[in-house]
Image 1 (tube, rainbow over the protein chains, first blue to last red):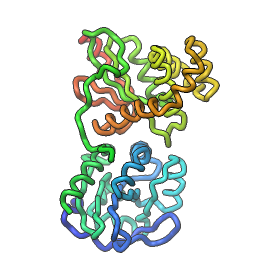
Image 2: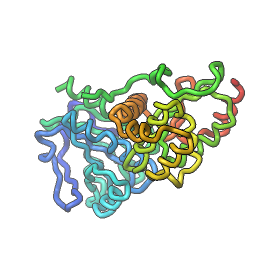
Image 3: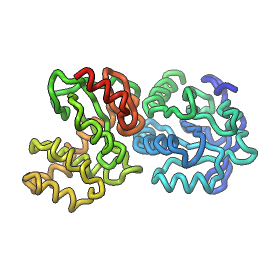
Length: 156
Length: 169
């Protein structure tokens, strides 16, 4: 499975937010969205990753981008994880059917969890940039997302 | 708009915090004063002759006192005592609250009124932010991260790295 490529429309997918509401393809419209796929809530690397991105959240906002964490953990676990970290990045759950949205984006690991991947979708629902870490243990720097946003601005 | 896209590690600048001999191996460290791994790195680097550059990389969600400590170190720097404050912060990680910062400032013989004003100043915040942003742009993702000869070493420096630094001394 390979990660969705720039220029591709975002697939049909469904995720669940912390309040239990559906988040779908339609919710991507009108915003630049960064989907941060991460393997597991409470695993050590994801912890550093979301802490770091949270520190520069205002700069993402300044660039008109919204960030979401995406994993196959249940919403309750994601919420507990987010509160434990003290971060405000909203979480989207791919719990049931497990991994279906991650698969749709080509971001699902054979061993049953999301790859550590980043996908930027433009306000028209087109993927403008994507990145998969060499291994799930590698943490992509926030600089890569800013590079991706600059690339997305040039492309669209 | 702040550009936080990828950029090379800035070389040591005139207003960087630097200590150690000119000819010792250069280590540019991005660290956070409330990070126990950084405190460990501090202990491990103490006995190696290096030229050390310290840059701030505070992450507030993880370390709520990190920014306050970083700004306190900047305020101490205004009175020429950055490294003394740096060492004092790492040597007592259990005591990083406000009264503990005042106590350290008093112990270091700082002008307390000036210290208070400086650590709350925009200039201190800007100085810390500059370091943080250069770290983000150079791809720092965790603390501590040590750059040796342009190569990033995230985490507590291991024996191999310490041996390498000592050998080049």
